[in-house]
Length: 571
Ligand SMILES: *[C@@H]1O[C@H](CO)[C@@H](O)[C@H](O)[C@H]1NC(C)=O
Ligand SMILES: *[C@@H]1O[C@H](CO)[C@@H](O)[C@H](O)[C@H]1NC(C)=O
Ligand SMILES: *[C@@H]1O[C@H](CO)[C@@H](O)[C@H](O)[C@H]1NC(C)=O
Ligand SMILES: *[C@@H]1O[C@H](CO)[C@@H](O)[C@H](O)[C@H]1NC(C)=O
Ligand SMILES: *[C@@H]1O[C@H](CO)[C@@H](O)[C@H](O)[C@H]1NC(C)=O
Ligand SMILES: *[C@@H]1O[C@H](CO)[C@@H](O)[C@H](O)[C@H]1NC(C)=O
Ligand SMILES: CC(=O)N[C@H]1CO[C@H](CO)[C@@H](O)[C@@H]1O
Ligand SMILES: CC(=O)N[C@H]1CO[C@H](CO)[C@@H](O)[C@@H]1O
View 1: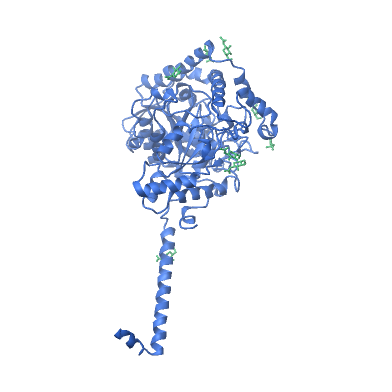
View 2: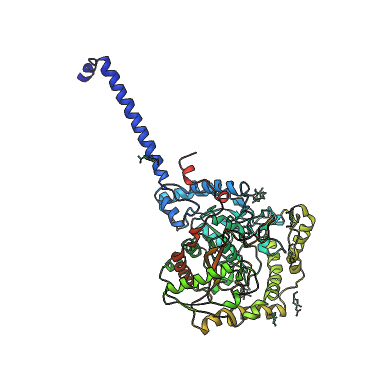
């Protein structure tokens, strides 16, 4: 009270001085906060989504630096920049209209109860053959208009596991239509998605069939992705897009709810930027599924594959080089750049403490080189049976396609969408349709394939020389994946090298075929059934020593610019 009286005694000059001080203080405080907040972001406190690992994202989510809603919005913006605009990579087919609300719910749950797993609130992109329940709003089509609008009643087995772990399915990725089982078409092309191209050279052949998943992972359009492999479809795009790919043992991951080629060869696996991320994803998607009884062949307990991530894993290991499989007639495996990078990799593997046995050929190497017609026979017979069962399992299909025969007719009846110029072939579908079930020839051939892949193939090579794994280039379009494909055995692929900037372009045009300037290629470690834990350890030791992925980036226009800083706190 007394003070208020006193205040009347202030002179006019004092008043002005006082106001100035207050104004100055406000200004200084404001500038200081501005500077602080600016430097907070400019110091790179947000992970760069081009390379961000699952653990880095979990750290930011746990610390409340950003939310899963922020992550979904940022990835959506990054996809928008490069998918149809700019370099038009055509890697993504559809976005999940429910992902923002799912992310909000998962953010809330994290605050209340903590995270369910290392994939809690992490956006994942999946190949368009992996079913997601239709009520969520996405199609599952294998890239075909023949399945557009078709309704599945359930998530695929691997999707159920992802969701239980708290992952967010961000969208579906483009692919070679029907996982490359339609006809003689370029890799990464589907009628619905158009031609997917790689991010390391304009119009680059991305390799397939999991092309969109690989291209998306290569430039950070999601944290991690899933692909599938029947023979080469994870390994090749992982290698050609500077990524890690794991093709698991047949029966480690469920194929329930996946648009099939062959139950005797199909597998679902991660395509990621690092072994650490791949190990996290594989640990979550592996496991038994009553809806795919092949999964009952796996050991009773799925290991936590992240425990395999030890830099000394190559110490004391015996690694074999099956020269005759990879020195086949394909251009890339005899390419001097691939061969010299591979020879350097062998030296690195030795320096990391392993004994390299070279050569360590598969006794069946000559038969592997001729295996294609027999592999195709098994796949063609299986495809007809399994795709018909898939069509049958649909709740509805507005296109009316309910069998393989219908699909062929549908493609012929809608040439403007399913058979555009240069993409008319459906020869593989037609061959498959001519088969008549699993007869005596089929079972004989299947047994023969298993024998040359496993018994007289990978297992013979490993056992005869007491090896832990085989190593060879994951070069695109070669026989390098065939023994493992026939055997149902695992392959773990890591970046090996890049074509030089001076590499001549083999064929220009709508698609610049491999090789091309700066195009990556991979290194594959192959083992016996359910040896993923050992292979991940071995590949991790190599990855951590070389860090090849970080030595080259995508071409400038293919690198999305939107980052978390552009989204966090902005509405
Ligand atoms: C499938 O795609 C169509 C056409 O793009 C779209 O209208 C629809 O919402 C999508 N989802 C489902 C579940 O059909
Ligand atoms: C596949 O198509 C390409 C390009 O049209 C052609 O050169 C090649 O001969 C075809 N291969 C087969 C097996 O039909
Ligand atoms: C899966 O079930 C089918 C029939 O239900 C059976 O023929 C087949 O042998 C089983 N496969 C495995 C790996 O258990
Ligand atoms: C079809 O392929 C030829 C040869 O590669 C190319 O010149 C032409 O532009 C292609 N047409 C379309 C529509 O992609
Ligand atoms: C079994 O089916 C395949 C594929 O249709 C065919 O090539 C083969 O001749 C058949 N074998 C027998 C014994 O009928
Ligand atoms: C294909 O499989 C049959 C068994 O059905 C086998 O006798 C034959 O040698 C195989 N062909 C090749 C080229 O390996
Ligand atoms: C307070 C502070 O560190 N300010 C710095 C923030 O970053 C800008 C630009 O990098 C610098 O100019 C400021 O000095
Ligand atoms: C999410 C997205 O961009 N989807 C596009 C995939 O490609 C087809 C064909 O170009 C487009 O119609 C989709 O909008």
